[in-house]
Every structure is written in C-alpha cells, then in structure tokens.
Amino acid sequence: MTTYHDLPTPVTLSSRRLPAAVPSLRALIVDPQPAAGLRLALALSNEGIASHAVANGVEALSGLSRWEPNVVILDVTPPYFASVQLARFFRQSGLAVSRIIIAFTDLDISDLSVHLRGDEFDGYLQKRPSSGELAVYIRSFVML
Image 1 (tube, rainbow, N blue to C red):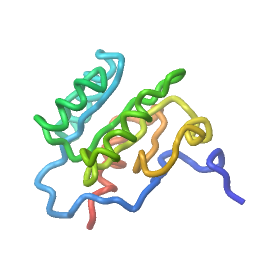
Image 2: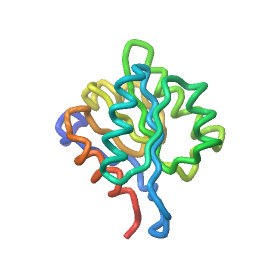
Image 3: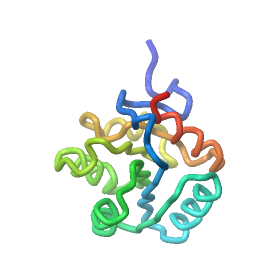
C-alpha cells in the first residue's frame, strides 16, 4: 500500500486542468514572507509564467479579482496552516473553481495531508525544486 510519505514530489491531487487554449499562464503567489514571494514571482516570470506575489489572504482575494491568475501557489506554513484555510475558502466560495491551486511548502505531504478535507489543492510540491521545475509542473496542468 502506498502512503503519502512514499510519493515523490510533485504530487497531483486532482483531475482539474486548465484548457489547452489558455492564452497565457498567470500565477498568483501567496507567501507570508514578501521577499520570498517576490523572488519566486521573478523566477517564474523568467520561465515565461507571468507572476504576481502577495503576502496574505486579503491581498490574495484582491489579486484573484484584479489580476485574474489561472494558477495560485500557496506557501503552506505551520503552525496555523492559514493557506489551507484560504484554499478551502477559495474553493467553497467559487473564487477558484477553474483555477489550479498548488501547495508549495517545506512540509512532507504526509504532514500536510492531515489538514486537508477534500479538494483544497490540485497539486503539492516541496520547496526544494528549481523555478524551472516548478514552471514545468505548473505547465503540466494545461490540457494537451
């Protein structure tokens, strides 16, 4: 029997995909450490994925409506796991029905999975990969 802990990163957690005809990939990065979010946004932009970073849930709500990303990357940080609750709110409110939400964290997926109830995230990736690997993973959510 395979457990979460046995799975390599990245892990795809849903069948949700972006349409092949998506004009461009746009990522909203939510990271409570503004400098880290900006570095990731710059790195993804250099990989051809337009990116915008915000530091909290209020800014993320504004970014969803004003910037209209098709991918949301949430930094999941203990001890409060506010990003899990934010992802849950996005799904339940309809704000992210057609958006891909990726958990980007230092946590092992087995540590994250105990906080999940359903379809909060479409993907999981530990923070160790390069921005190029993250860009490839994001692109894997586009239907061929």
